[in-house]
Image 1 (cartoon, rainbow, N blue to C red):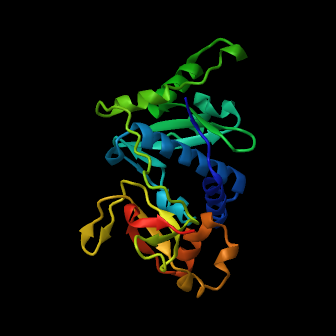
Image 2 (cartoon, helix red, strand yellow):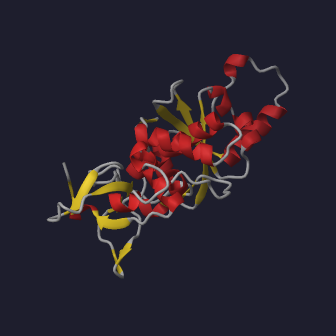
Image 3 (cartoon, rainbow, N blue to C red):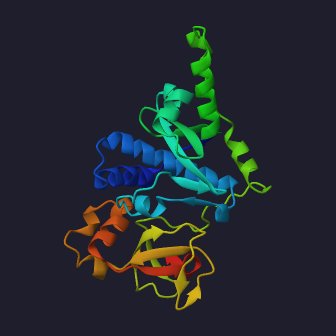
Length: 262
């Protein structure tokens, strides 16, 4: 199992993206977003960054509607869907197959009532789930309720689908978060605010060269002040969404070239 505790930024973005997606069920969509965030953190710790991709990373970060995709992640070439629920009966093979039989792998995430913690219980191949459902349908006896089971493999075994790798731990090294006041080294008069912190593996070009390090995108107050609303009244978690909506220019820096401003 793998436990993930979403912070305030994760929670606000998960909710706001569900609202902007115009989801029929905001709560279910928000919880689904949190499940994807939990699995992204698992991948970041245990799987090589070049061998997995989160389809909705930019949409969640900027709280934009997602383009349609039948799966949430691609891992080692497999299409992976994350199913998140408070009710573990949602992870019975027949229930999973009814909701998703087109992908390769299903990851099962359980969440607490107040959504402050999620646990990745395990994963299973969809073809295995289908086989188990078919076996159950052929079973002629009356199956006792207590024999119903959740079919899943331990989360750590997911790494066995790819090349042999050690514990990866590719979490960002930079110390910045949206809302921090920063300035380029040696230029404390040019105060800006952190709007986006890009994933470490994101390829970013600056002045025609690929950035060697982690990228942080900032906005300057003078540009933010030209927006239609008072950006200071907007939660920092949503600044990326606000700037994207209003076409406010962001500037990209290598994280080691920035310093905190009091």
